[in-house]
Length: 370
Image (cartoon, rainbow, N blue to C red):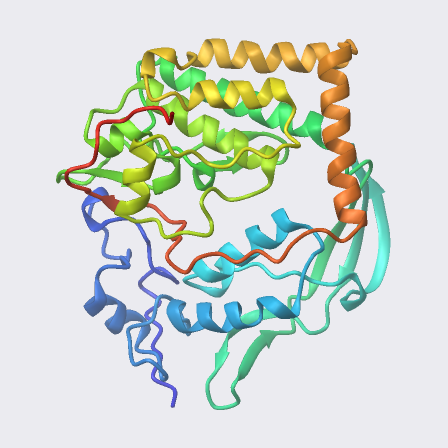
């Protein structure tokens, strides 16, 4: 039964920020405002809960997507995780990604060659997911806007230099924030945006909930912040270390356990994300320094940026130790993909990768693990 609504005076999908974080705007519909969601989007014909966007129920569609995880893979663990997270958290069709096998494209035509590879135009006749058709029990797809740009990247396995450049640019952006006397209060990969070539840091998190606790994605929050201490520049260094490890290990931190108080307790007691044995030792040591429970032991953003810059220069100058470590890391990643060793990732249903208010009582004082 179709119980959806569409109020064109409001946004097409909910905003997941806490209601207290932003100025009131009648066009905005917040995730927590169930009554307004019901008025603007109607209710789901299956679970009878208010929609999260035009013809979209986040909870029901997340279950459908999750049930289908076993039926597809990109062949790359990191890409699979990224797509799966977008599908589980999508509040509207525009927020979910799909893995599209190459054979699904038609009328592929060469357009030009860019700095990183060749660019083609293509068509995808089946179209993109628009909403779940309850009557037919299948996805309704938009078959009209079906033209796409395809890019074929050169040396796509040898990406360590790209990783280093990306980390340097993020560090540079964080340095600008610190030099302005500011501290980012919600630093995680979801707030790293990209233009055509460069990453930049968004949503400084200056508008925190007007209540005790903190706001953010738990794995990226420094232990002293979880404990209740004020934000410092050192807390940003901790978050940067978690992101750096995620980039190199190609794995979301703590993806197999709930993001709850027990995890917060473990982090305060010294638990940190697993560091892959394939990460060059230079970067593994740098990550560990960023995670130190004693904030004075963490590098400053200036020291961090200089270390990343130095590593890139030494790689370019063929520093024998670092160059060989990075080369070996590239080879291992390529071999794993060629051998089909990308495992099926099981993400815990309570590993919620969205910002939310956290207020854990009676946490232990942060220490390093023994």
